[in-house]
Length: 84
Image (cartoon, rainbow, N blue to C red; front, side, top):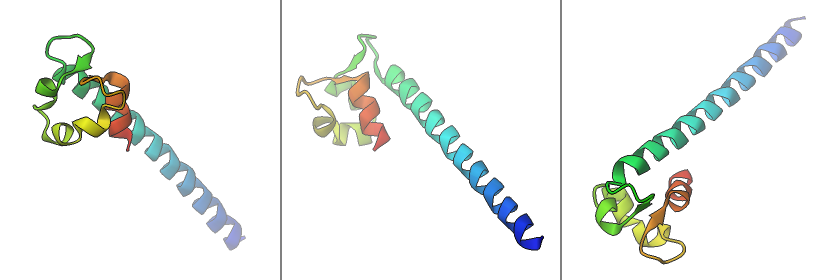
């Protein structure tokens, strides 16, 4: 009986931990979108190098995040960078 209770407790903790990870990921994606929008000063749905310069980490990784090489970061490129 004690082993069953221990097993159930471990299972519940695992489910709770997994649910917590999902919430963190969702929050991170929402934060990323908010950051993108706050950096996009002219509202053209893309970030120029000048706009990205407001975030040192983004400015440092701009070239590698600009996967299509057009000199701008789309929201998709920005989000892909923040997922890594």
